[in-house]
Length: 207
Ligand SMILES: Nc1nc2c(ncn2[C@@H]2O[C@H](COP(=O)(O)OP(=O)(O)OP(=O)(O)O)[C@@H](O)[C@H]2O)c(=O)[nH]1
Image (cartoon, rainbow, N blue to C red; front, top):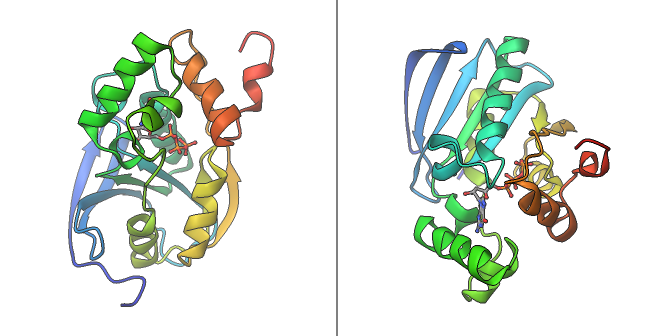
């Protein structure tokens, strides 16, 4: 299968509070999930297109939960793309809880609260993997959209490596730092110390 093949795609204009986007909904031929891409401006044959590959987090993205920084990152990414008047936000469904699903994510949150485990150990304590996300669908939609290279908005070095392995040229990975809050500090520290995310600003005074 060619890497820019999508099973099905449908497009519509989408006016948002951040201005106009083109919504591309698609079904991925490998994971068979319905994902989406919000596209601003012409991106085909463009280099260094601002791109956010965002994993579904219904608690943070929809309900504004503060214990993770997902909702803050989603807003920051859309604002960055709107300010550049060009870019793609890929929203990956089926990525809840870094791929373990919503029920098990909520079970892991309970363990964090009752046992003091961090985001890594709370998954392991449930006998679950720490991260089973597949970024293939994001790569396939970016290739489908014809972007030549991306400016990836992410603190996760793995994400850049995996996209490259799927044929997406990552010209630069640009950190996407969300506000540090008392509620998200333990999560951010675990991401930096246990998952190797690029979060040097946690040490900054006043962070
Ligand atoms: N298992 C688990 N998943 C979580 C938890 N908090 C958030 N998530 C999930 O983590 C995913 C977001 O991944 P992150 O590791 O925060 O960030 P990332 O996408 O790897 O890196 P960035 O590109 O820098 O945002 C989403 O799928 C969330 O549902 C948690 O405590 N436990």
